Image 1 (tube, chains in turn yellow, orange):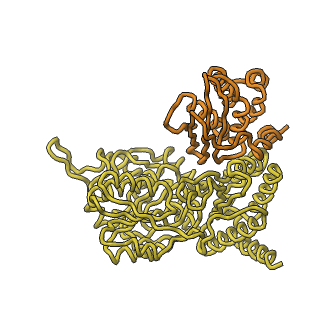
Image 2: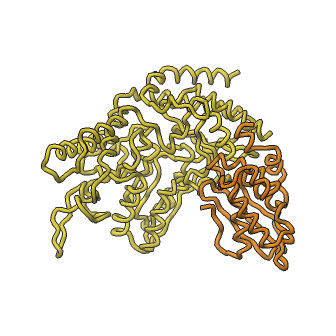
Length: 420
Length: 150
């Protein structure tokens, strides 16, 4: 009976956050799928957008649309101001020292590629070592492998234990004089593990090694303070934190960004161009060649405003309750195995059945209106580590409810009946 | 019958549970691997080809019920067929899975395999059903690169 009382506790805790009111802000949550109310548990892939973000995009195109940083006319000044205000909001959101340290990019992937190609190609050489972890998303593996091929550096991988936690002692062992970069995820997209990044940064800094944190899955769930974390680079995407797709952020310490060459050449990243020599623009514009995703940046600013107005303490309690409730409810389903059982987790529940493939689960859940991700989650090495070809992943956001988890559980029982 | 029942028919569930010709083949003279990069499904198809005829065929790998059942049914259908007939069947199955032919048409052209026609209503699953077929096609052509559904 102890399990039941825990469930009741989780339900009550989740009930304190006014999720019904929050859900009103997200128009898509009213949708029906195959005649059933949408249960959106694919937030790890992309989150839904509040009306405020949708309105910001619409308002920009309806009342402010213009190119930025060039025209002297009214609209251009207005668009420039809106875009730069959004940059300021991002700065405040992650507590960077200055707007110069906020570079708008397409997303986390581009942010990491910017660092590997600009910092990596300039400062790393043959024989140097780069440390990543065994639970990285492909976007924090492949750019480093490409860099290794280009400069002759070597990739070293911190192993994870059976719960999906980084083995810190192994990390200490990997750090050595040849280590020239560390790049790890803040929250694992496939397992939900919250990585002790502050400790990872501190250990690297003892060896004067810079650290990039992949924050794509962290920013929708945790308060991030880049100065407190001490990291040198922090990368995240707008679309996973209730903002638009196609815009993301690279935070970089300005002294490092200053030393780095531009990532792409073009308009806006220059201060003077002649055929003999080009002078690059100041930070952050040096890294923003071409017309950027202006509406995206403004939409991201609106998402940050939306998040800032939420009760984060209540939100954290609600999300924790959702995860405990889901973990406990799913554990009670026969034959279900949860992949990723770290002590510190955020909003992700990955699981497998011995005799039913994740893809079949995904299709059957979809027929019940439940959207989950089935597959390798762009983290094939994680799947290999746990010896499974794929998992089903339910990933939560603050607008999800315990009632929706009940729908998931019922749908899973239905799927098991099909394959009985 | 709902779309879902159409997809997971008894025959398909049975092939998933007890796949036919699910074994490696020591004497294979053709072999190909197939990957579906989207979901991580992986299949290896083994052929024993003699005078242009598939004398034996088997497969191994991991995947969802649809991909396993499709591979299992494929091996049962292809055994004893010559290369031209196998190619014709591949083309017809492909058309059926992508919805280019309707159910009745498909039944005429692909026989028992028409049971897989429910897949075309699930666009995300078409690749699951076609993986083994792409792989056998690669094996017949003697290709050395792994086949993919992309």
